Length: 228
Image (cartoon, rainbow, N blue to C red; front, top):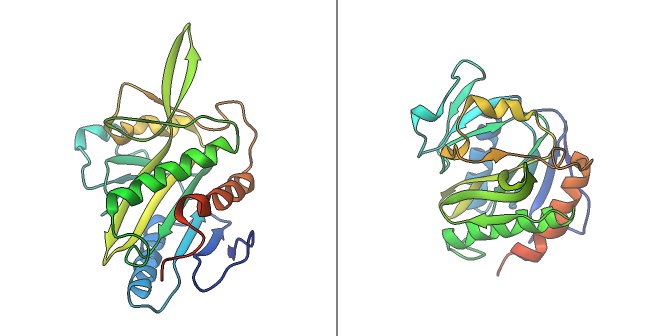
């Protein structure tokens, strides 16, 4: 079931927000994104932020190294045109596919990726979690004490694609996934650090809680309206 997320007044100049209750097959999601991106580029549809979960699967970005696919038979593997390396998607992880028209906003891909990072950090702050960035490491990280030391684990990933200045793919935030599922790959090519989630950090946030936080913080990063 797909439903809108009615958390604030929306106009034709604000993105549509959509939530899928059931896990969405990856190929189906890509097909829908492709169609929506084309419609946005042609001025036939509003921008869209689509919140969903996937069945357990691995995706390979344009920079994926085959050596990082440790267990290729564990889950289906999808080759995708987004940037980045291998990632895991599955139940308990909130995926946000972000389809924005950068021509109407700011035609700067690097700035868009930085805005995605800021959005994730602001969303985590809603749960009193400090998300941080690291040079040379894609995604958002959290520090945590372990065995008398401070570890840094990844809590969110970013992978985007741009076509005719319209963005698609987006972000994934670990709410309460099975973290063992990440062991079939080297997530984003980084083997020296682990993966965590809100639940792993001791938080009991629901997916709905996360959705509300994502929408509440979105306008503060991307603006309430597209530029005219």
